[in-house]
Image 1 (cartoon, rainbow, N blue to C red):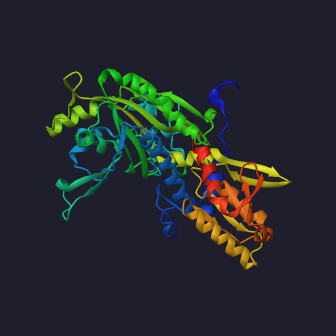
Image 2 (tube, protein in one colour; image 1 turned 180 degrees about the vertical axis):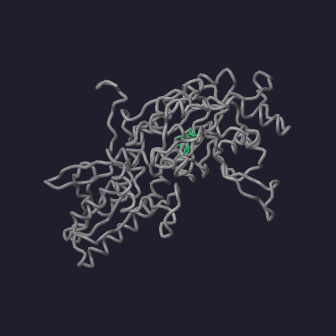
Image 3 (spheres, rainbow, N blue to C red; image 1 turned 30 degrees about the vertical axis):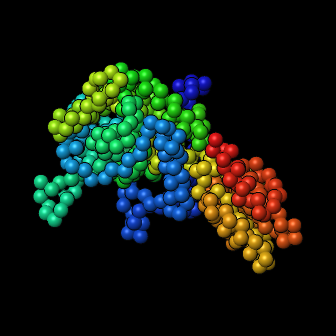
Length: 466
Ligand code: ATP
């Protein structure tokens, strides 16, 4: 890499720990079951994290469903008929290469071991790869086993009897729910091609080496959209979705220099894919997938048609043809997206000789849109006025009151959680009915009438939302 290589960009935050500790301290993300020592690769979203993640999902739904005429939503079950996962190829091949250390019995995903960064998918399938490269356990240096395929699906039993016939899987992706409902959605909405089905929901993968905070979890959420097109339209549609999905991240504030496209090599393509391009983000631990865009051809509907015996062809009234539509998929997730927005918005600044930490989150994503703060909490009239303004704001948005410190500290606390605006009530407010609105990023202050606060904040939100 050369200095002017676009891949050479620095991460927004050098050390992941900065974000992990902010998340814990301020209530974005907690380790799951912490009082019992935690459970690996499951994280709980705290009071601020749930707001941020809900806002991310809302922003995605807005761009993918609300703003588009041809995409509709769906919320399919997490548990599905087990045949779905046989047909989809997940039972046979939804697996990662696993190696095990002979001395400490730790297990690793082969392609995440140091020294495997440049390996091709063909290399990763080579049974002699560990020996050939002389790979050792990164923890204790012990010898590693040859790689074996490890299926990532969680199994459980449905009904009161624990027998093989009752095995069901926790879905590892939301996409299959959209495929098996293709006919239901098409017929109930009378959509013509091209049209899409969007879903947001939990998925589960028994990842071999989870980690990097919420980047790779065993329980997580996905935001996936399946777009059904005429076969000859698939390649063009695929290319059209690449900039649209890129623009969604930059629209909500991600620095474009920290994004890149990466096309999958032919031997890396998943069993269903004709072409795949990832949008990657420069995380503190390297360039990693944020979202994948896939041309899945007719793989899914053809296989479900063959296995179920149900006719899944589409009838095109314009040409009087029957055919299986092709699918272009955009597959991302709110956990990785929220994580990216947190990292990318993190700033440390110096203001009048003091350190200021700011999350410069897009206002649509910020957990609280506004904080209402009293300059003097000992004056009941000031506190009453704050609560009246707060109640008015809460009709439309998440707003919060805080009087537990002096005003300078209250501002800094709101900066650190990304609240775009603070409203301060002071002694003068009691006389002239005006309050101060302070902007998080510019720190400028404006005096406006208290009755106009809700309207003013709504206008500012609308202006940045576009
Ligand atoms: P990776 O290569 O990182 O394992 P993948 O290619 O398996 O990801 P997809 O199957 O394309 O991922 O899943 C679509 C999206 O779902 C990912 O881009 C990511 O945003 C999200 N996702 C997948 N696995 C996880 C996970 N273990 N934890 C959090 N999010 C995930």
